[in-house]
Image (cartoon, rainbow, N blue to C red):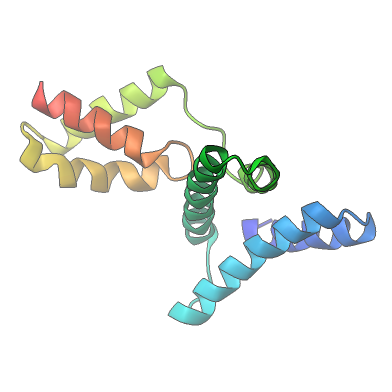
Length: 148
């Protein structure tokens, strides 16, 4: 079952179970997917849906930090709940050792020797790690390995 179909099925089950908060979060996900499909005139595949989910996760994390700084715990809790619902559709995150191994392998595969080659390494890593690692952390690791 595709990711998009799974989300639609979960919306139906949340409606039947009268889970209002979960239903709202699922509808946000479905709306973001539909918006991208309409904007780009495409039928999204799982990789595209993962890209949308990653963007939503990043937005939620930023919002949580801002709400916490402003002392708005109610809004931060809402964002945390939405983050947990979105996270359920992402693949298992990589542990630090696996991530380091992926980065090292990509550097070797790209033949990268300096920071100039970072774009080629990231181009290899992005599809492999989509939804499984924070790309900002990956970028820092690549930069550190290429600089050192």
